[in-house]
Length: 160
Image (cartoon, rainbow, N blue to C red; front, side):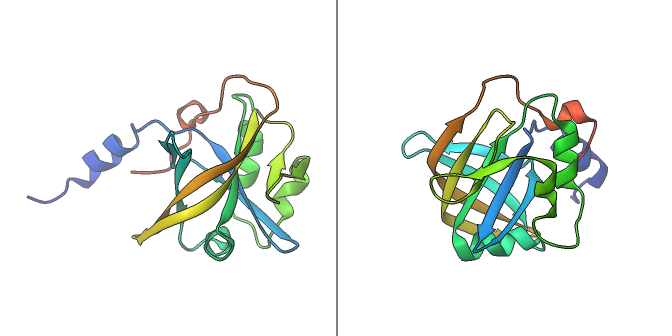
């Protein structure tokens, strides 16, 4: 039996996803992208699991530094998610669209979002066109709680 590509696409796109800004830093260089393949992986220690496109510039930074932050967007921040979703030519330019500061572990944390966590990679699985990183949450900053942005509410598709 062969995989029904149309059915696979429809069904995998039914998996619910939040939308986050993943930010990375290597020396003075910062970068970020909209991440949707993210989930919690453990209570103790607190772990997150995130899949990152292997051909993206942030992927290499995560591999080298073993660090990233996840910024949780409010439900009304689709425009900000779009800034970080679009391909770009260089590093860092997307951060002109928002105010940020560096967290305790040096990762960019966006100020006008629900909050963010800084994470340290403890393992990764490189297979296919994405690497699945497992990372321990090292710091958490809550700016203001509220409803979070999710992929389904944007009308966008990523997956399938």
